[in-house]
Image (cartoon, rainbow, N blue to C red):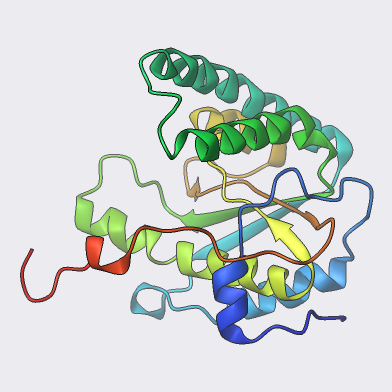
Length: 217
C-alpha cells in the first residue's frame, strides 16, 4: 500500500493525536488496517503471552452507539474541565496550547461517529483489583502493540488518537460489540482515518534535562 516517505525517526516524532484533521469522508481500506495490525503483532508482550485482541468497528450503527457512550463520558469530563479552568491564568504561556487541545477534543467528540474506523485494543483478563505489578504487566502487553499500530498508520497517511473516555461505559460498549466483558479488558478507543494533509511536525516539549534523572532523582 502507498506509504509516506518518512524515516523511522520522523514517524516517531510526528505521530500526533489527530482530531480535526481526520478525513471523515474517505474510507480506510481493510488491507491497510491489516497491514498495520500485522506490524502491531510484532510488539513485545509479557512473557511473550500475546494475550491481545483488536476489535475493528466500521458498522455505522455500532459506531454511533460507541460514540454516544464516548460523548456521555466526554460531557462529564468537559464540565469538570470548564470548572477547573475558572481559576486558571488564561495569559500563561501554555494557555493557548491548552485551548487548541480543548477545541480539537470538542471537535472529535462531536464528530466521533463520522470517523471511518474505530480500533479497540483489548487484553485478556479483567484488571480490576489486581496488584499493581500485574496491572503494569497487562498494560505493557497491549500499549506497545497499539502504539506500533498507530506508528504504522502514520507511515501510511492515517491519523489516530489515543482516547479512553468510553471506558467508564466499558461494559455497555462490550454489549454493543459482543466482547466478553468478564474475560476481556478494553484498553482504549482509537479513531482511525486518513489525514487532511500528511505534514505533521514534532511537538513542543519540555527540555530533556527537566525530566531526566541519572542514577538518582
